[in-house]
Amino acid sequence: MHDRDAVDAVRHAALWFTPSEDGLSPLLDLIGDARLVLIGEATHGTEEFYRIRANLTSALIRTKQFNVVAAEADWPDAYRANRWVRHASRETGATGALDDFVRFPRWMWRNTVVVDFLEWLWRHNARGMTADRVGFYGLDLYSLHASMDAVLRYLGKVDPDAAARARCRYSCFEQFGTDEAQSYGYAATLGLSRSCEDDVVAQLMEMQRSAADYASRDGRVAEDEHFVAEQNARLVRNAERYYRAMFGGQAESWNLRDTHMMEMLDALLEWTTRRSGYARAVVWAHNSHLGDARATQMGDWGELNLGQLARERHGEKVFLVGFTTHTGTVTAAREWDEPAERRRVTPSLEGSYERLLHDTGFERFVLRTSDARDALADSRLERAIGVVYQPETERASHYFRARLADQFDAVIHVDTTTALTPLERWSRESADLPETYPTGV
Image (cartoon, rainbow, N blue to C red):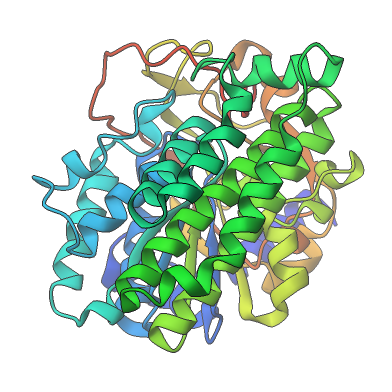
């Protein structure tokens, strides 16, 4: 389809919305009866993406009884926030509940929009029974050492003998410090150090075998605590595999990461169903994780992602939402581990989906991709900005090819966007290089 015809088709299908919880009814109507709503972002540092996503999530919780919010965040760090929003801890507020997010890039979660959302969720949960309270969870696998510590603390309380066995197994990592997990992967891959794979698998299997015994000791509280600990043990197993895979090819490590996130999400859905009788989840992550990889260049490279896996496992229960922008500002670093800065976003390239949506002349709209399938079926460039933004190499660093009609069920376009406001605007962050390096998505 010629670009002029494509622009006309998009203009005809575009739905106006206002960026507030009450103004998102067009998108709520499109979502319908979906039980898994995966909401992306084209950058990790755009105010409008975060704000609209939070407002949409609030509306889903309030009007469609969604009860799980799962994010591209570390499990133990997010679980501290989860305890606060579910009234299970005495944090001083949302900012304090986010204090475990110290690893670069902390602004992804320590920002003003997330604080506002968690405060809203805390107030919402105050009106419900414990079993009905909505949780906030992390799906990612970066927290190898923090998750090992959590497993040991849990077992130390419920089964000291089991804690001793776990400590022995996890001691396999002792020669590598808390910031040296990648060094472990390198050494294990080259045979310079023994692999810890058997140890972490054995630990997870023992915890799974002991689940019924531990949970029977103190009712629901014990069951919940064991679930959290088992998820940490699952994370340790998958993170160990991930660190070794980092030195075996990008596709393998990427696929392990997104497969892990799908495992964690499925476990959350099953656990929430047992606890509350049903589960409906919103997922927050970058577009590159939530737009179906089979419709992008990622699929050509042998990569899969969470959006693809969710569609394969849950079918029509899944609704995928992406974001795009033409220009504006973004919070991002110039290089890895440099402080967050307010950066200018270069206007989108000719031939990209962002330029196509910009050419409609609309400042913001939501588009059900099936309503403009002919205009969105062709492969075009699409932009992805992670935590590092390098406009001087933008075509190579931040664009890939995609078929938007198959990648997402709906796209929200905000033509000119503004930078997210971090809680620590000028602080240098941890030097640890997590698994998203160097792309940051």
